[in-house]
Image (cartoon, rainbow, N blue to C red; front, side, top):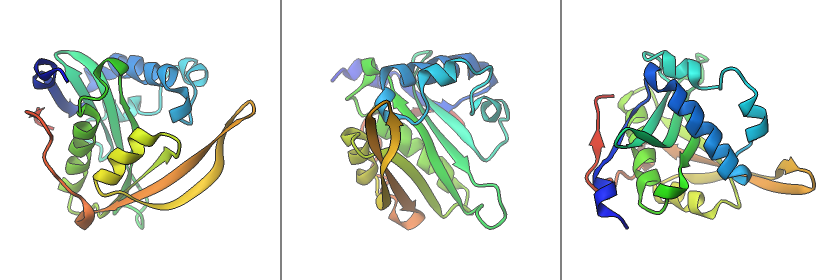
Length: 192
């Protein structure tokens, strides 16, 4: 584990000027980990604008994308999408969790996810956070379970590519079930 690298990691909400870096990181994650996401690199790279780009530009939105930065390089993503209907505004969803291969296994993903969850729960109206994860993605499943997410459903053969299938696991975290166990290293978080 590279302690020097860890001390330089900064976690913050992405801003308008980060849209190009977001696009690059998002396409990179789909290319590097095609089995872990429902979207494909081929589909997304053809789009003029990716799903979260408008949310990143709207810095006042209840939904947001957080980034992990090694100095000025965006190395990780994790988003929160708040439900917008009157009867569902008490919940939101974790989306697009990713840390690049060069920074894997350094606790960065866990710290990024904790930062996103803490920011979501700063809003007293948010009571629950859901996510879905490819069942075969063992590392991600362990991180989610460690932070208090529990499975509420699973769909077999949720994703299909040619003749291969992946199961999708659906998980939930309630405000009172969140385990903020510390970030594991010197966390540098800018004003969000």
